[in-house]
Image 1 (tube, rainbow, N blue to C red):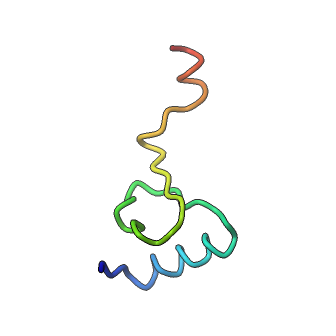
Image 2: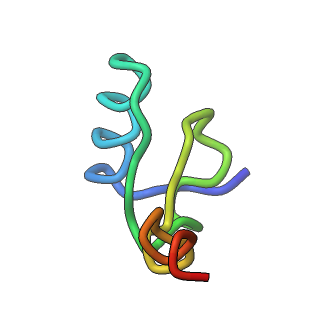
Length: 52
């Protein structure tokens, strides 16, 4: 079991309560929290897909 900081736990709890995703580049901080985590630095944008 991995422990996360109190602040990250609060963020995860709010996201889970609202069925929302957390957007962060530190995705490992939220692994195992049962929420969707998005790293925008690894995601391609719709504009990039259109230009490809």
